[in-house]
Amino acid sequence: MKAVFELPSAHGAALRQFINTISPKDINWVLTGSAGLRLQGVDVTVGDLEVESDKLGMKQILERFEVNIRERPYLKETNVMLSYFTVIEVNGVMVELIGDIQPSQPDGS
Image 1 (spheres, helix red, strand yellow):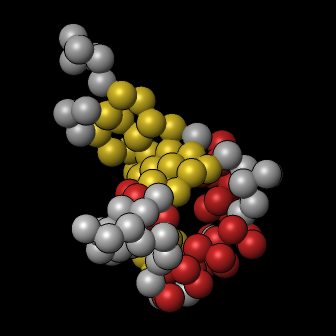
Image 2 (cartoon, rainbow, N blue to C red):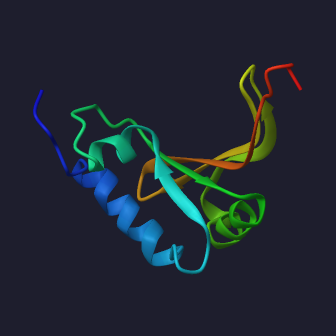
Image 3 (cartoon, rainbow, N blue to C red):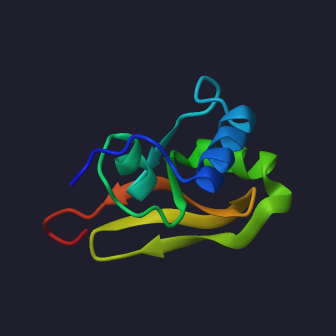
């Protein structure tokens, strides 16, 4: 496997627009998922961009990308976590926003 430290061009352009609109200096967020792994050198296929933030950060991101919302925010619960979830579109690339992640405890709470 070969280390790859760049995103496909559409994803790179979308990430640049996201960064220009949502500075990590102003709002807490992190790129995760396949794009985050790819930028760390893992040779994986990038499908979309995944961004994690806290509840306030997610609200601020959605305010700045209001016209780009493709899936209204909702509370998503799985067997491992509870979080807010939504999808926006940036330069034709889907960006999944995951906010206020609360991991499940060993006792199921």
